[in-house]
Image (cartoon, rainbow, N blue to C red; front, side, top):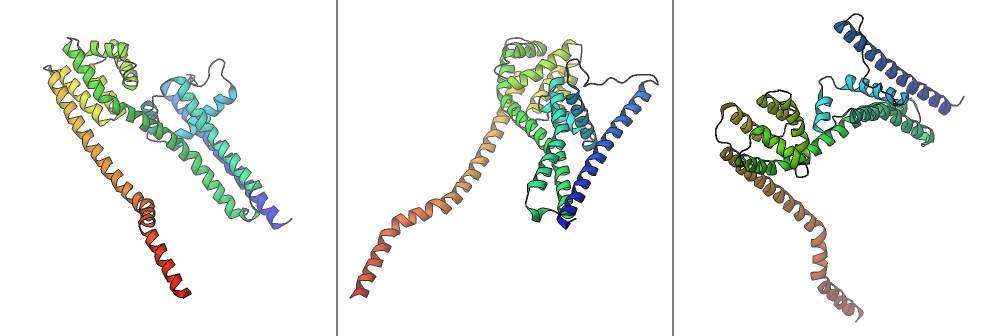
Length: 313
């Protein structure tokens, strides 16, 4: 057997063994956690599988279970649950699609790496490259879902932050009309969903909790802690204080709006300063050489012609 073929067989065996160990470890971890939960609730209790539903395909259910097992191994502090809420993926369908993506990604990455191994250049074959492929595949399988989820959460939180000034204006208008906090939230959810799409979804859940008998201050505090948007937290703090102690709400909201607008003005000035510095670099690199050729080019050509005529004589 040639050395290249032997190294390929060894690398393939390493990849298959690592994938098998990964799958067995995930299954053992999942079964151990289910057993612990069964013992904690009742010795004879049956654990409900959240991915078992009528009409669902077994393959998708297995991928979702595998994705959730991977998430439990990677995320030990519960960051994924908070990021899913911040991204607005609260429904069971959205969460199942996320777990399917997280479970299918390692298989896709392994398939791509195997294709690169078999159809790539021969100089990239060998046990060392096999270990490198294995490390890259494991790293991408764990990191890509984190990047996707954090990116989705950051984009939605940016949209929420952009809706805060209009949210304050609507609150001031509704409070001036004589509505209470709960009535203002209901009007915002019912009539302002197209104006505040992201905050409308959040306050729809807030309104449901208030109708179920929850405390207004506690619900608003949980919303602020979950979204973790500084501008929104300031507004929610004013609403909690007014709900607890009473008093005028219009002036604090207008003061908060004024502070937010000043802060955004400073942020825009900083962005403009950074952009002007970058544009200066672009002008020096691209515009200045062209301007130099346009201004000094004819004179330089004339000097070359004169020197050529003098040498000719």
